[in-house]
Amino acid sequence: MAVLDYHGPCRGHLPEESQDAAIRDARKIKELRVSKTIAVIRGDGIGPEIMDATLKVLDALDCGLDYEFVEAGMVALEKHGELLPQATLDTIAKHGIALKGPLTTPIGKGFSSLNVALRRHFDLYANVRPALSFPGTKAHFENIDIITVRENTEGAYLQEGQTLSADGEVAQSLVRNTRHGASRIVRYAFELAVARGRKKITVVHKANIIKTASGLFLDVAREIAKDYPQITCNEMIVDNTCMQLVMNPWQFDVIVTTNLFGDIISDLCAGLVGGLGLAPGANIGTNAAIFEAVHGSAPDIAGKHIADPCALLLAAAQMLDHLGMVDKGTRIRNAIRETLAAHDRVTPDLGGAGTTETFAEALVERLHG
Ligand SMILES: NC(=O)c1ccc[n+]([C@@H]2O[C@H](COP(=O)([O-])OP(=O)(O)OC[C@H]3O[C@@H](n4cnc5c(N)ncnc54)[C@H](O)[C@@H]3O)[C@@H](O)[C@H]2O)c1
Image (cartoon, rainbow, N blue to C red; front, side):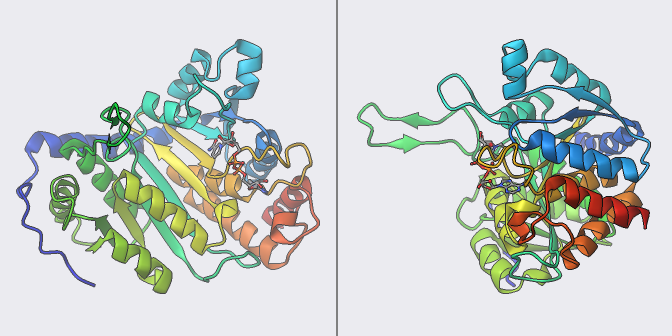
């Protein structure tokens, strides 16, 4: 693959203070591991069903976690008149860790995405999306194990700077990457790679065309990579990355990239392993980390007890990894792998006739056995 020979205006070493801030952030992330009480948002639609199943599995692992249940979404709107009550934000802030069921964002003016609101409130700058293949799914590929680390707060997803001319003919938006933003996300990706025993990071960019915004990101990544000689670091242009992911996904280990590219690539990776049904994600900041399934509240199947709990369970496993209980996270992933391979009591989306509850029972039996 081509290593980009980029000579844009942003070349040069990171300023000391920027490096220090990024390192401080990475260290603070580790400090979060002391928390053993977590905030739990059961969520809307299928949320309560898959959350109950997930907590049953977590309890079977005897992780020593306590749960403080808080409300958000439609439940909170009905009870408290607001989608995201201050008490919920305070509880997440207190514990630093939340496990979250999917939330329904009501359609209509005045309601913006709760997930975006949480991201902004806690400055959750790292969106971490593992894509892991399992047997007995619609996955097109086997043996995939890719983590996408996406910058979550800047890039092409800024609220400000989006304009439409009065005649409706010209639309503009702003793309802004900062050295601080690039530093902390790249630093996070390298720290994660080291902590998980990963060998390689691919920096995905478009610095050949978007010379300043993507160039700055690439430049910062090149500098930070020098601090991690044990991790192989390569660079790849985003369009080539998409093709390479479909042609030869096994070449990827950890991907780090900017907001828009990461949004697209993480869903592409989910597609490689059978779709969003098995896709967990974490939104991580310096003071809080929120773990969730990537899919939504699935109102069409809510209350039918056929929702697949796997994505939320995999998010719980990711949370255990983050809390320093990687062995327990691995046990969840192994139990899911064995249950899917045996096609034992799995839900209809996976071709089974099981329910959310029987699926959880099958997992718990494997954890006990
Ligand atoms: N992270 C979140 O909280 C989040 C993410 C996406 C959408 N949403 C919200 O969810 C609501 C519904 O959104 P949508 O319908 O576009 O997407 P969705 O992911 O809820 O559902 C899409 C399709 O996938 C199926 N599906 C989803 N999860 C499943 C599971 N665990 N098991 C079996 N089938 C599953 C659904 O039945 C549906 O057919 C909206 O209000 C949206 O805003 C929330």
